[in-house]
Length: 489
Image 1: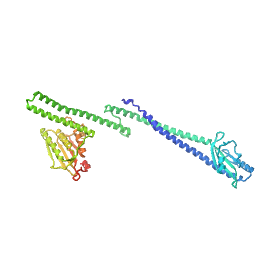
Image 2 (image 1 turned 135 degrees about the vertical axis):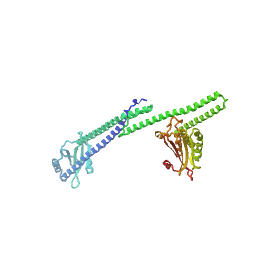
Image 3 (image 1 turned 90 degrees about the vertical axis):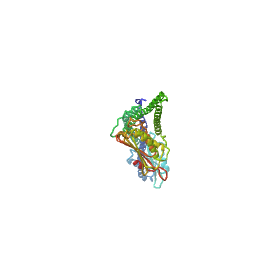
Image 4 (image 1 turned 45 degrees about the horizontal axis):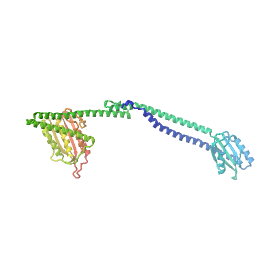
């Protein structure tokens, strides 16, 4: 798949649909709530003002309620003529029969279905009604019954005010809130679009580089700001690190294949050569026959060891490396490994010394796997030593652990290679036989024993490999709980 065919712009539309959609909905809800409160606030103010006005007006008309109908009508007219708010508020005064006897302006036609008058007369309390007149004008009507001093109904007072200006003001406020919401949504959208555009280019570069790395171009790298790093810079840095690790793993794999191929080719070549020699000479020369059989047997043993290393490594990688733990005498396995290499070292002119007490505390271990580790460590010490060098095997016990150290005066390990020798496939010295996985397997085995394997080396001086294992508790038969202390050793 070609990275250039990717559609990064889809991110912008997804962001606009998801984020902006939510923002728009939230803004609309805020606008609806705001308009509701604004409208309610305006209408509440008008309602409060109208009730205040009608109570005040009713107070002025109380002195006329005990008069005759004619005098009441004259007093009502006098009140309307002197009323200061008659230009903004329509005043209707009813007699006790429900007829309008006085109107301040006379042009407001209240529809018959207006309920405030009937409700006020029925309940003898103030009542209000909001609706439209016959001229389609929205009004608020408030009615208050008038009573004589004896409590008898003498008529009603009705105030009407137009709500057109109020509704217009509410509409203006609604438009202001709406415009503000649209502006906020546009600003958020523009901000988001600019932000997405700012990250599209690096994301496209990351995608292209990732596909390039997936195609095997492990040398490709992404630019990273070292100062003020953000999440994208950290992602780029992580991808660069991944590419470095993949390149390193690829190199190790190639070196491993080359090394294993060489390790396989050499014994196979020797076996084939001696097999042809024996076949050519027949069985007439016992010396050649015995020597050939010995060489073939040794090389087969070497091949078998290499195959075992590969199988162990495969089990370790898949997590199927299993141990059969039991109380084990570590000296028995160590001495057996020492005996195996005593003659081999002597043939190469290397001194192999063994120093250990007569007895060590037992450890919980897989005896065969533990001997495999000792063999691997001693074999490495012999391989990397030359004629006249010394390899010393030492064992000792401490409070909560036993320690085995294999020291040699061989070529040592360079400082830049020391931290990598336990990694899979890694070989510090490629001129010496070996697959490069023995130490990785040995380290894993020791870790599964709750122990540690440490390597200390100086180039051209020698190497010390130290193995530390927890001892078995005398009372319970379990390992000591001293792993933390072991790690400090």
